[in-house]
Image: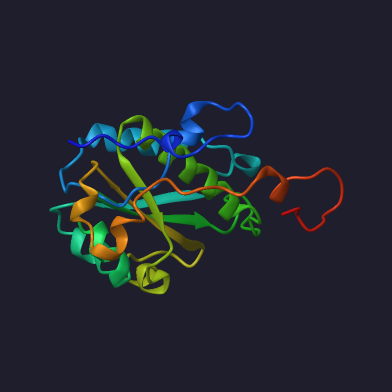
Length: 201
């Protein structure tokens, strides 16, 4: 099995952080090999411990392992661009968030933010296992809600491909050069003291 290329080979943080944050990135090349059920569950377990407003925990994960009856349904939700490489994943996941609070059914304004925290936990745990974990917005969310019987109180947010690393040479030609750790904006473009202002460039 190929090893994942650490992001630190092409990225340099401006200040000291745990290596995990710089090393994690989102490859596309996957081998198609299955991953153990216990490993997959550990990704969901990490997501379970994410913080959320009022401990509401609005995130829900629907998933389809490769070679199961659900796999074609999940794969068909992706746009062709993503199908071209995600077809080699071990598991496809749809992330939902409950848009109302459990106890009083009022709107949950932070549902997407909280689910995003759970997604990040899942992605970092996957990286610690040496897995490819790639989030996607290139899919049909309305179709996903319909074919996966998602209740009206839930919003479909994203899809996630998880798998063992593969050879980038096997990716479609238009994706091979893109399968490298991406850069990030400078801190001066995302954080400043006091009121909002246009970032320095």
